[in-house]
Image 1 (tube, rainbow, N blue to C red):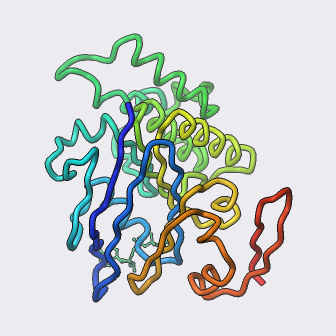
Image 2 (cartoon, rainbow, N blue to C red; image 1 turned 180 degrees about the vertical axis):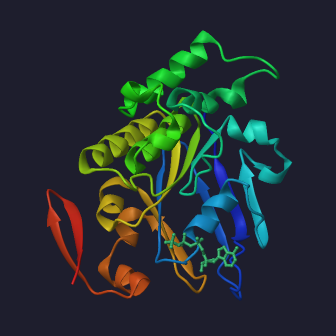
Amino acid sequence: MMSVLETRELIIDVPGRVAGRALSLRIEPGQRWGILGPNGAGKTTLLHTLAGLRAPRSGQVLLDGEPLSQWRRRQVAQRLAVVFQERQDGFPATVLETALIGRHPFLPPWRMETAADLERARDALRQLDLSHLEPRLVSTLSGGERQRLALATALAQQPALWLADEPTNHLDLHHQVAVMRLLERQSQQGVGLCLCLHDLNLAARWCDRVLLLYPDGELCHGPADAMLIPEALEKLYRQRLMVTEINGTRLFLPE
Ligand SMILES: Nc1ncnc2c1ncn2[C@@H]1O[C@H](COP(=O)(O)OP(=O)(O)OP(=O)(O)O)[C@@H](O)[C@H]1O
């Protein structure tokens, strides 16, 4: 299934912020969007708004042409996976049980997961290198293992779109690369991706579209190559940058 997430004249509701520039963009199948901006710029708020978990101050978010507010939550969850930073690990669940939550939007009411659901969840855990931890309680996982489980749960959902806040947070180098490869394969299959990123070099290697969010509500977006230029990024982060290039990929370092 392919889906398009679109904003029309969207202004996110950042508490205490006077206004901002209205955002109109479309996340098309297969596109890889990166949202960049300094702390407090509103990246997470935007992601929550795109997921329909937070009301905008004005404007609209549309999923496949219909306002998100008119969709049932279950239908949204059949298309859209979210990976956020704060996670509620309130009740004791195993790794496998947690990955299976990704299948819940697809289960008929009061029905148990099928063998096929179980296989999807297991496959997702395999792809995130978590098979050996299937019976473990989530509360005992390390930070990186927890992050990979959140990604596995989203993968088990087989979404048409991903909204992810810092998907490589807590991950070691090997798993960072593995996760970005996995997300790249997703995009090659027509899945749309929208990620908040703090790592400019990751954004430069990985994104095809970039949205820059400024703390005062200003923003701009476009093709990654046009957005990831030192002048714009230095203004964005209020930090001087050194830029070099390796194998055709731009590399940014703080000066
Ligand atoms: N419930 C709240 N009450 C008051 N202020 C809030 C609330 N939620 C968010 N904010 C403020 O809104 C602003 C945007 O927050 P948001 O988490 O979206 O930023 P961000 O760009 O994701 O930042 P970071 O890079 O630090 O994760 C911040 O200044 C934050 O303090």
